[in-house]
Image (cartoon, rainbow, N blue to C red; front, side):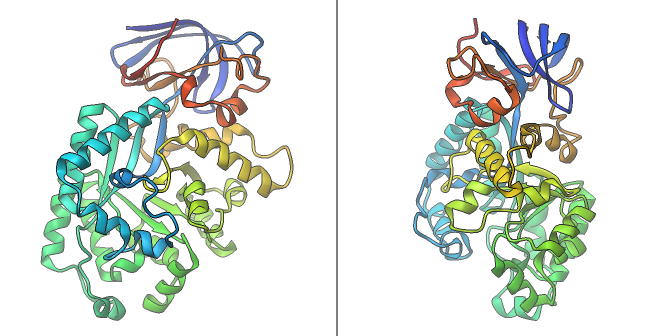
Length: 405
């Protein structure tokens, strides 16, 4: 049992801060939540209980290569078959690779993250490896597998009429037997008939689908050359993804399409900036009907720590809005909490209420830089550091535990 008293809890899907007389966890459930009045600020510190964070776009497999692609372009570092990432991953021993993945999952828990959606390379082997690491750490790894090698030649991609070869169908079925879904890197890696096949197979297995779209202008241009349509339009029409990653260079027409589809869009501003790409249109997406999420992207670009991602995204949005008012920091915090439940509603809620799963983080707002916060939500988004995380709990189990008085 876990019990806290006289703390602050971000309550419900709207993440409203309330003083809480008793917060009691029994087993894997919040059994008691005795709330008092709402509070926006504090004077003398408190423990603050927030929903556990979800990192919605990771490539945890390449955390064994921190900053290895420094100075490389997106294509040089990350594209198949000869990109730095894929060449280096092939050299890792199983034991070494598992060691790095497991350590980074522990680090995620140390920084308040209870789960992540991972885009796992290396086919069946890659999905199995992450599954083992997740079991060891307790972090909820939602695994989206990828073909170990691209199943089409460049000539076949240019013709854009081939279905998946039988060996690729067999590999896909084997991946889906382990993973929670599928995601190839870009729409330009497979043919239109193949994408339609994958949609049908994943629907049959009730698995998730995700895709990287519009990370740079070449994604759109290559898709137009190959299929006569941009990569986002093709993705929505052929593949119907549950998650669309990046949208970094989305134009107004593409933003309107994302809004009309109420698409789940995962932003990765730090990774985009690290590659010298444009910053995503955060403000325009906030004003749209899209459901926004956040991810840290490749482990070799960024640490899988959502705290700096929240801060960076908030300040990008404020700059893009061009005023000191928008957005409400709550809008940004929802991108790693309650908005995630929209996508993973059969797996998580993303917020705290009595009777719901005990997925939460305890933050130490008695520390000097937090104890007199005038806006608790803004301080969570912009000031909290890993040293302020006292506990990370998933389903009532401590994934990380510091000293809680």
